[in-house]
Every structure is written in C-alpha cells, then in structure tokens.
Amino acid sequence: MENATAMSSLPTGSWFKPTRTVRAWPLMAPAVGLLLIWAIVPLALTLWYSFQGYNLLSPPATFVGLENYYFLLTDPDLPRVVWNTLVLVLVPLVVTVTAGVLLAVLYDGPFFGRGIARLLVIAPFFVMPTVSALIWKNLLMHPVYGLFAWLSRSFGMQPIDWFTNHPMTAIIIIISWQWIPFATLILLTAMQSLDREQLEAARMDGAGATTSFIFITLPHLARPVAVVVMLETIFFLAIYAEILVTTVGGPGVITTNIPFYIYSRGLLGYDVGVASAGGIFAIIVANIVAFFFVRAIARQL
Image (cartoon, rainbow, N blue to C red; front, side, top):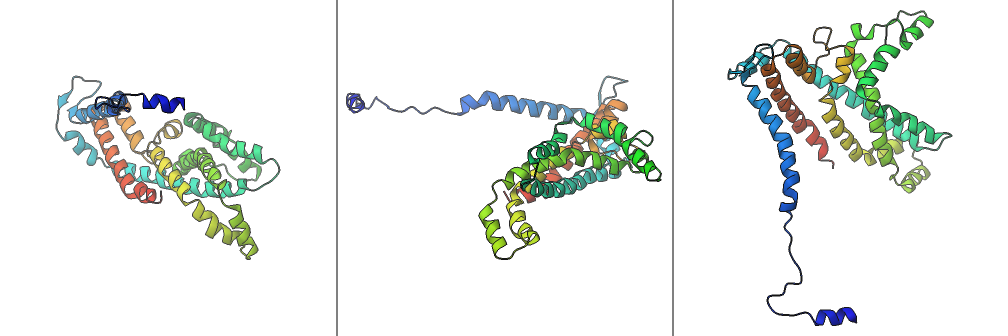
C-alpha cells in the first residue's frame, strides 16, 4: 500500500521520465579501445617491419618493398616448415581427441580410487611446456640415461635416440602427453551430463557396450569434441617451447614449424624484416586453417 501511494503521488507531467536509458558504448569504449591497441599496434609494427630491410647487426632500417616476402616465399625450407606446422597440428589433434574420448569414458565409470585417478590423469596439463619438454628429453627419452633406454637394455634391445632418429615423433609424443589431460577434462565434464536412463534403456533393449558407445556416447560428445578441436588448433599452431628445448628445429629443418622459423630468422639470424614477413605469413596460414578446419567443426556448435 505504501508503494502504491508513493507511486500515485509522483508527478505525471510530460517532463517526468520514470526510467533512464544508459548507453552502453561509453562504458565499453575504454576496454574495447585497450584491446584494439593491444592487438592492432603489434600487427601494424609487424606489417611495417616486413617492408623494411632491418638487420639488428646493421641498423638503421631501410625500405625494401616486397623483398622480404620474395626471400621468404623462395626459401627452399618453407614448404617443409609449412608441412611440419600442419603435422604438429593434425597428428596431436587426432591423438589427444581419441585418447581424451577413451579416457573420459573410462574415468566416467565407477571404480576404486577414481578420484585419485582423475587427478593424476589431469595433472600433466598443469606442467609448463618447457618443463615438460625437459622431463621428456632428459629423464625419459635420453639415449643413455633415460627411462626408455634403460627399459630397452633390460629387454636386450638397442636404445632409441629419439631426437636424432625420430625427432618429429618425439615432439608429437610430448605435445600429446601434455594436451591429452585437457581433452580428457573437457570430455569427462561433458560425460557427467549424459542421460543415464538412456544408457539403461539401451542396455535393457540388448545394446552392448560398443553399440551404446557408438550411437549414444559419441553423438553426445560431438559438441565438446568440437570445442576441444578449436581450442587445441589455436595452441598447436603456436607450438614453440617443445621444439626449442628438445631439437632446436633440427636436424636441419625436420622439426621446424612456422613459429620456430620466425624465431630463428629474427633472434638467431637477427633479420627482423624477414622474421616480420614470416609473422604475416603465419597469420595468413592460421586464418586459412581456421577457415577450412575450425569453422567446419564450429558449425556443430
């Protein structure tokens, strides 16, 4: 009654407006402006340096037009570098998504010590890439002192020098080990929302574990898998620390991807111009991959 009386006592003239419209853009402008500066300024500087002949050992920079791009596109190592980049995206994606689905289904079921097992399977994701690469290089894959070498000698086999004979495989193993927990975490969370009554009904109708997995579990995980693929693609395109710590892009350029190629040109070769051209090239490649690969997966969302 008091509220009704108060409302009735308010003036009803044309000058009175009970509500006030607040424009959102003045409040959002500082944050949006900061994000634009954060993104556009480095991109603009990279684009500007890509047209400059700028070597850190012989400044200042001079305008050279498209010379850096011509040097980049005619570099005989570039096709192998692009191929390595695609391999380091596609193969770990297949490995991590496949293992993530299987582990999510396995850890979703009840068993003794499930809580500890879930914690252990997720733990590798919290290890920094540099530390992870050092562990694999020195403690596991070292041809003399590593765990794998000791196991090989124990069974009378010759130890494998992973980073000399199988460098790309070694890097893929390291990347997959680090990102399988991420896929498992996302997919295991999705498994919690799976309708158990549907599974029970399928079991009562005579469906086996394999049939239920193919026709019920996998369709339920389609969207979470799409999310995992999109996020991991972004990170795999920027793989760098694992290569730097283990193979340094070698032997030759066998394990050099686009980010490490840019690093080698800019900070090892001191050629900022070519490295900047490589940065623009990397942006183009990443957008092509996003257009033909990530967006195709994103339609499921």
